[in-house]
Amino acid sequence: MRYRHVQARPAARRDLPQPPRPPLPFRPPHPDVVVIGSGIVGAACAEALTRRGVRVTVLDHAPLTSGTTARGEGNLLVSDKPPGPELDLALDSSERWPRLLEELDAEGRDPGGPALAERCEYEAKGGLVVALGEPGARALAGFAAAQRAAGVTAYDLGPDEARAREPHLAPGVRAAVHYPQDAQIQPVAAATALLAAVRGRGGTLRSGVRALGVERGADGRVTALRTSAGTLPCGAVVNACGPWAGRFARAAGAPLPVQPRRGLVLVTAPLPPGTVRHKVYDADYVGAVGSGDADLRTSTVVEATRGGTVLIGSSRERTGFQERFRAVVLAELARKATALFPVLGRVPVIRAYGGFRPYTPDHLPVIGPDPRLPGLWHATGHEGAGIGLAPATGELLAQLYAGERTRIDPEPYRVGRPGLGEEARWTA
Image (cartoon, rainbow, N blue to C red):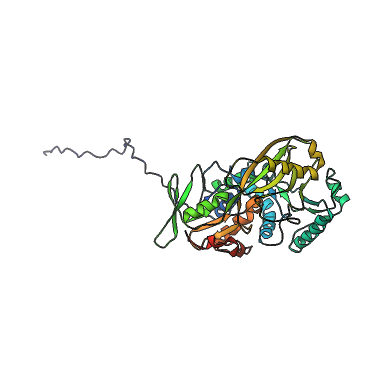
């Protein structure tokens, strides 16, 4: 038998290592929603959205939580709000804050570590509002009665009862109201905890990225956010830029009358424990005495921190984004604080700090969709109350976005309401 030699075709050697293929570029899914602003309100919106499974990216032009939130006192107040939409948000947030911290703690807690509420320095210390004269006492009594009818817990106190709670109060105190629902939280720690939950659920956090405007599709809806780092496709944008919300709204073509209003705070040297036991305000601060939109307004807020220092506020100035402090404002804060607590007159002030609060003409936040630009949402205009109103704001916005039934009526906070003026009803 004759054999013919046949040369075999070379075959791929599966037993030898093959040259590596270049990896395909990783393209993460585009976010459903981009939240502009990593402060407490933006963080609360992002947390509430990701809790519903929404893909979220949070952008900030500065380091995370370093804006208005980092320059606040951390007040969680119902005592300073008359019956109405802002009080509705405050009461809802007052209930949500401790429950939210507990839920986030259970979701991402480090075993053996301190509770999240402790890390965020949450303290339900209660508020004490005092009146130094008879006219103020009468006005405060009427203010508190109206609040009680709206669901606020408020206890009227006489001068002796007030001084039993705060022994260092001035002898001129004529009446006081105790608000046990008032609380305190460390703002940056709280916002950071909310953002940590967003990241833990797959969200993205980006600092140092400036929002420049939006892109629209053929149907007029938002299709992308234009940023200093490029264009980011998305389905919706939440304007939570705080004092800068008016600037972004104009850049997006849907202007809002949100302006910066500066607030200053004095910080004293540490005092012995118990010198100031509650969050103490004068009747002017809560609106029982005096009101208005003057370019400068000061009222007295005094509270101690865990470190023993005392925070003294507060002021409201329309100065644009001017950073320089005015000595006359600091002096007025000190004068009013020592009138309420004479002991503070012997304590040095070690520093002062301030920040810009997002102000609207009718003193109500803007929460919800913008009908002029489908896909644009707003969560801004909380002025000095953003820390206290954040959980309810985030929940309301997320409920509206998800098409859920809302716990709070969204109508008072809508874009285009009469209190915002013509600027919120036309497109630039």
